[in-house]
Length: 120
Image: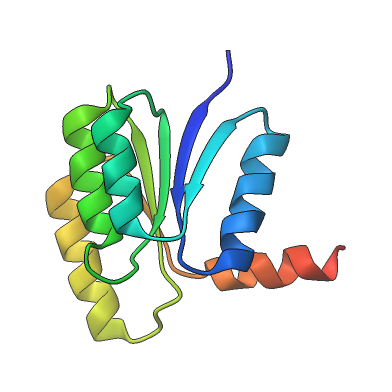
């Protein structure tokens, strides 16, 4: 059985990287370049096991997480950001923790992208 993965990432290279990584692991990936499009998809299809989303602009990755938690059966949510300002990160973590307890917050994913590009 493959994992159904929804990815919302506004940077095309990172969307492609996350999609390739999940596909290589046997995941069935649906990717979007905006959180708004991902929310529309979630309203039509509730069958996602893993949600990977960037904080993005409004609607945000936290909004995607809220919708996924309401509509999907026990999804695992990872919210990513390249944001480096601690005050914005602290607010995002606080809001994220209010949405769901089972949430990973990945702040250094740009480093993952850099390492992946070096290995090509």
